[in-house]
Structure formats: structure tokens, C-alpha cells
Amino acid sequence: MPFRMSAFALIVTFLALLLCTAAAVSAQGYSLVGNQFFLQNASAPMPGSALAAGAAPQAVASQLPDTLPDADQGRGAVSLNPGAASLFRGRSGGGLFAPILTAPPSVKRLLDLIASAEAGKAQYDAVQYGATRKPPKKPTSMTIAEINAWIDATPGQPHAIGRYQFIPATLRRLVRHQGVKPQARFTPELQDQLAHQLIEEAGYSAFLAKEMPRKTFMRNLAKIWAGLPVSTGKSYYEGYAGNSASLTWAHFKAEMQRIFPA
Image 1 (tube, rainbow, N blue to C red):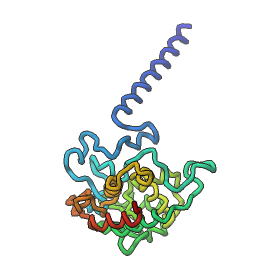
Image 2 (tube, rainbow, N blue to C red; image 1 turned 120 degrees about the horizontal axis):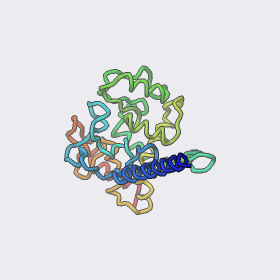
Image 3 (cartoon, rainbow, N blue to C red; image 1 turned 120 degrees about the vertical axis):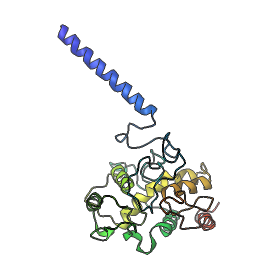
Image 4 (tube, rainbow, N blue to C red; image 1 turned 45 degrees about the vertical axis):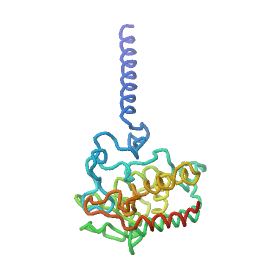
């Protein structure tokens, strides 16, 4: 009997410690969903981050490696909206991201605008120009596993890839969140599917519902894609490792008004 009571007490103590740990993690701004990968309120800088300190974080077009201390939370590596699902994948049919639904024409035009600032003529086969060791095949011919193998085999260089210049942490987060298998090929369709989620995380649905101002939505997009400007006309990551916006603010604003007329 004393032994049984002691074991019971140990179990109760363990559970109490586990709950205390969970509370402490939550208090630091982390979600317990997804192995603490997603940050809540990720669009605001966390204490001690590079952005909070006034230093620009790594941008998509950076010549520096993909992983930097205190990298900005709006880069797509950590979601601006942790609860967002992939925008055009339904929640029925046995899985959170199935079946695939048709994206409205406005989203295709928005993706074209983003790609004009990020990918150049290579489009879906674009690879960051600072990568000295390119992938062995065109990105659209590679599987997710092959892309990860290339990333792991070439440390110390940037690895932004595809039409939307996914950096490794962003790509791996989206692939994991959407349940994409390692054997899946990095097709244009898959790249669009992954980018749909980033657009939704930036506030697409809230913007359409008039719950988010146009300027805020545009700024959120610029936090994810460094080639897009903020209202000053500069990149959100201006001057960091030579980054600058590829589009003017006037052009970005005019195109957004054309795509999403008031």
C-alpha cells in the first residue's frame, strides 16, 4: 500500500510539472500546436529579436545563409497567422487540406504580381542568385526530398527556390502543415498551393471581409516577400545584405487596386 501511494504521488507530481511547463511556454508566446513551431502574434517582434532591436532581418534575396539568429517572424518561416489553413483546400474529405478548391482569379493575379518581384524569367524554376551550388535539376523536376537533400548538402549559402522564393524554414513549415509527402514533386501546382497559405496568413480573407485595411495587407505581403515595397517605397528589408524592393510603391498600390477594386 505505501508503494502504491508513492507511485500515485509521483504521477500527480509529474502531471503538475507538465502543466506548469506548458503554462510557461504559452506565456512566452509559443503555441503548443505543432511542436511549438508556430508563434502567436508573429507579426509583432518578440523581445530581443533583430526587428525589435531595429536591425533588418534576413530577406528573400539575401546573400547570407538561410538561418540567422533572431530572424524576422514575418518572413514566412513563422506564420503571421498560425491558425490559417491553406486558402483553397477544403476541410472535408478526411483531411484538413483536401480536396483542392479553385482559387479565384484575383489570387492568380496577386501571385503573378508577387512573382514579378521575386522570380524573374525563371518563374517556377527560379533559384536564388546567391546560391553558388545550384540544384542538380530544375526545381520543378525535383521532389521535396531532393530539395531538402540539396539544402542539407550545401550549407552556408542561400536556398530560396521556386516562383515564390521559399526559404528552407518556410518551405518545410508549409510542407509539414499541409501534409505534403517527401516524394511529391515541386510542381507549379504545388508551389501555388504553398503560396496560397502564405497569402491567407498575410490576411487575404480578412482583407476581403474589410476587416483589414489594404495598406496593412500590403505591408504583411511585404514582410513575406522582400521584393515588394512598403509605403516608403523601400523593401521591408531595405539595405540588409543589399536588398531592395523590385517594384515601386506606386506600381504595387495601383496593381493591388486593379486586382482588388474597392
